[in-house]
Length: 397
Ligand code: FEO
Image (tube, rainbow, N blue to C red; front, side, top):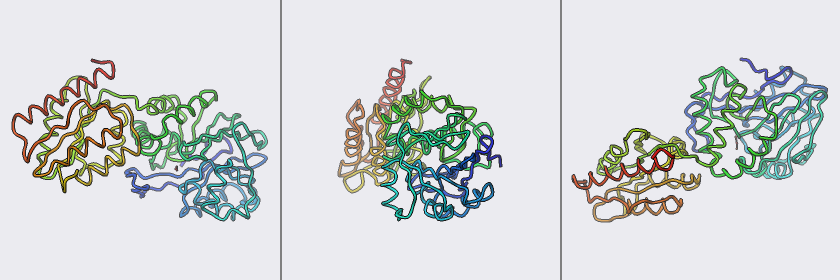
């Protein structure tokens, strides 16, 4: 494995090939927890890994230098997938000073006993010289936690961006030009949608700061390192930060006896017009990770649920609850679904769409038990209307 970013700057993290769940996120392609070692007159470890992999991190560092030669351990982000191994690393590297911002040490103190640690608090603009190279720091609150920050090596034009620009993507290669770039960009999009999307305004601010920095390489704390597609991933982030809509219509549904399924297929047929990417998503055969990823850049969404116990189906509820928390903005939508003796399903969906402040273009389409031809025609026309909206919103109408 090529682990060298530049002479004496090496990746020392862990590739978690088999993980499939990251606090509910479906990590279908595994994950990595990236850490980097910078050797100069002084030596710095940038970030750590998840606690169970602390031994491997320490072994990776020891293969490159004496553990007593590590002068600094930089913590860019206190979430346990990176900071979990810090207690073991601080114990194994007795001369290391932990470097982080004020909020980070406060957060670390809530997780670990930090009383015996040497700590240097930094803020935006501070610099630590390592010899020929230096570390400078940029606080990036809420990308992804309040204490998050970037570390930048100006002499090498490398930005260590912790979660930002990351992907849950296990590979035996470490660089973007060594893997299938379309897979990596999809996983970066999934990562953004499921982890970073609620903080879009902060991301835009962070990108403004990053625009003032000369960057040749972005080394995130998950996935591959960007060296050939830096401009591409930065452009993607600028679009994802505002949920820039594509001419895309999603028909997302759950169904009990396929009445809502019939409606969904009719809506999807209506939305399938030239220039529009119409996708049909049955929640039971998909998952919330994929749904959030697809919703982020969809212009329009039709969301359906049958009625169960006077409300929507539980997996439809879980998907809407999850989307509500992630706050995808500027969607045009409507609800649909079936009912029997109580009418709660489509009405509950509609309430969730309202809560998300999406533009609702019509009353929910409802059917008692199975849809008749007239209802299916209404669904088809509603899908057509949604497709037209998607084209107009994206300047293609
Ligand atoms: Fe990869 Fe926010 O932790």
